[in-house]
Image (cartoon, rainbow, N blue to C red; front, side, top):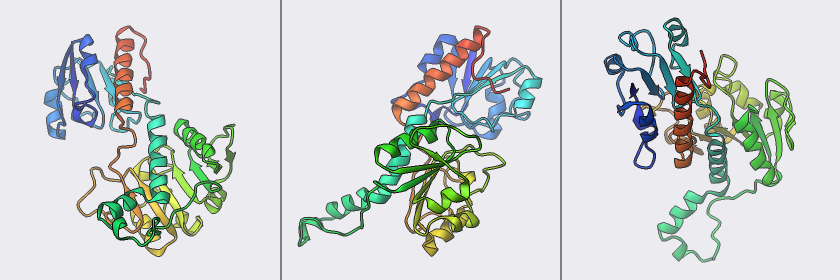
Length: 315
């Protein structure tokens, strides 16, 4: 049995390997295939595992043996599930592997905004503390999280994990979710009320027709002046030019962003160098332990499929 990985370098590195997949057959790893290279590379594959590679009629046109596509991801919008269904190809995703990692990164971003750790470290490394007249130079303002209101948009597993951390900091937690969920320490409310009351608004909903560009100029105007906007969900939930305008006007006191509309970041991305904007390169999900857990889920999905009891099937 031949297993082809089309974009292995999006998951595998020197610390995380795909060796566990070799129990199912020959594993062929491609670091990152171009769109034009995919069809030939998977032409004789029995199983394909990918992260963001487009799997559609064009890239699968030679894959006559293919019976299974496994995802190194929860989202599967890169897979033409209809085409796969018509051609007897089972598609299985990997869910709930990164909940704690994304919640952790969300607060890493929030704490960086409020505690200015990187800026103060640069201050020290530049030798400025040595020349300070006081032992505690108040160069950058710091603020406590205790007593602040955080608004969580999307109360799934990640949203609930964020709420738990916020409660530990003594924050008031508001949440907006399409369905009602009873979560300890969380007040569910309407979106406009959440925007109006929150010092921090953090997004943890999937990208779909309802959430596409939901954070735009109109949304930011409803938020507290000087509030912090955090996006570790998908770049598509925000209008980037409106984020920039809200930062420049001071309507937003800051933005912490891990995902953009186009990734990797474009050369002319308007948020590059934006005022009070912290950007990380879509790595909230990527701690070593998280990727190892993901690899285990992918292997278990394949094992279940081969045993005739597929898990996490999306088509």
